[in-house]
Image (cartoon, rainbow, N blue to C red; front, side, top):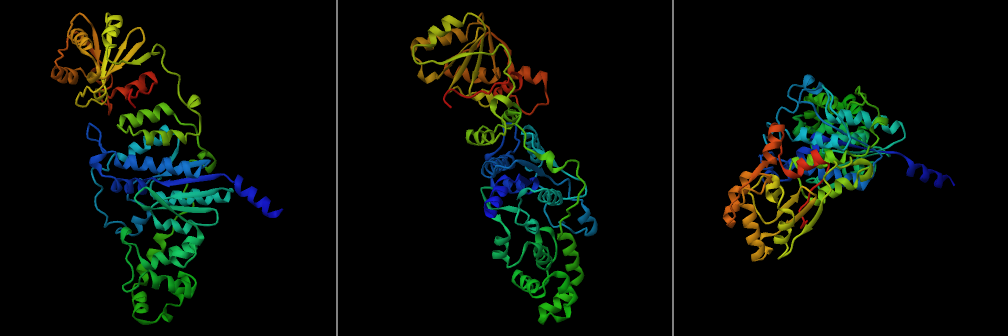
Length: 455
């Protein structure tokens, strides 16, 4: 009976997921080539894409009830004040990475996720504080970070998920896993790390003392403090090196210890997951030209709220009856709907690209809409379309008219009668926006997601 009660209690414990934003974004940045993840305006998105993918997978696999992401503010912290050389060996942040952290923040805000950044402290101090508070309140805690110092936080109810292959694989570090890998308990890890040193943080080690020796000493003497008290008992050249570097090792130990009482503006209870602002999520992804359907589906699939509850009602007046036109259907469609103004967009012009006309979208004022593939129309369709697109008396609203007027003539189509360019109109309304893509504008102004008919 007692075992059953214990299991039920474990099953009903709330679960808090904490992520180290800078650590994971930086790993994603180096795991994915920037040249493959860049918008038409030159904004790299590889760190954003990798972070979002890891986030979607982790939320799916772990099903947390509470969630937060912690970020570093700058390299100036209490550690750098105590040891100015702390992390001084790190190279300058790549230009391609700059700005992506802010954009990750916009995605998290659209997901209504809580994020923290506290002056003077690192993200891992914030995580340590929240993890300590949450465990005391009866939570199970999962920490996703690439910082091994977080192993000191591991308990029976706190697990570290450590990226071991880019951003695609996470290894679970429990007390048993840490014992298996290092021969130590989690509470002994900062003692071990102080002796080993940490080149990534510019914390010097002891000459001739590696991980095996450091672990042997901690196990032999029980703790760092006892090792220091009995420093004269450490034999050999390694023992002498330890005594010669005692002050720097003591500093390492202070800097390695995570702060567990950072003053925060929100409590663990405030981290309960909330339904997404799905329109805002889609807008962020569209603005960044992240159109991978798998990533979108994974992100939206872990929305705590339903699509009906989270999405705003679509704007009035945009109900469309759309159809995909086969050969022989374009000419009669134009005859029926082409007397009034028509909206025109090519698939590629949505993103203000080359103006590729593999697919053309048409929308009439009365609510009729159609797609057609220029390679799939017949001669009658071709004549009807060429006559209509070149008729100055047939008003046309075109997205990226400049692109259309550049490439349409390559297909033998001259363009006349353009009364409005929606991309240009969007620029005039908000010149500072990052994207003038039609799908992003549709979400922002109409609350509708667009997708090619062939998708």
